[in-house]
Image (tube, rainbow, N blue to C red; front, side, top):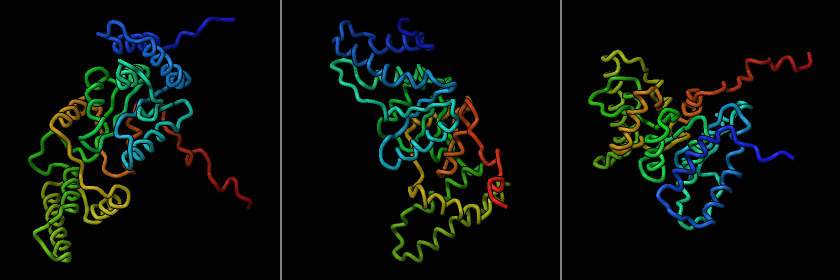
Length: 279
């Protein structure tokens, strides 16, 4: 009988374990056991594929559903595997923080890391800080409604879209009539289209209206807001061509193609349905 197999990424796992126990002189034996249990439960999936992905973000409610839909897009090639950090097993440790175990082991073991961001609060903030500090070269950020670190004017198509969404979701509490609120929003959006035309930005009223309707149907929320720290992190990834903004779920699904690794299957190009129909 052969001995235990050495994982292909054993050096990365060794680095992760060293960080997990760094500064802790004598952790309880149970903590060691939990680290080993986590490795045995979660890491083998990364051993069986050519491209592996760790998915970070918000794991609850509608945010979690969108995050997992993005992960499913990455899973489409048979030789790829994605793991959502928030979906991994719970650990029972006495001293070592559970988060340290998960983020270090999964980030080291994964070939690539994808962070899907929609807000500035919650656990995604410390996760973003860890991957920026330790794994920036293999991380790609996908912030919703992100248009840049600072923007003093409407310069791009994305700027026009975000401004239109901000107008659409504005309260206009000072206007009592619902009809007048609708008229006011229409006027504001029309002015944005005028600016777009003046700046040479190609977007039509129909395109803008359709996009707002699509956004309302699947993400009925005002544009995401981020702290200055978040924006600086995104700017860093953007400078490395590793930051891709999105507005609707259709765009987020398409953004999966921005991740390195195997191409997603395009079944429609492989065969014609008519081939399987009786003449």
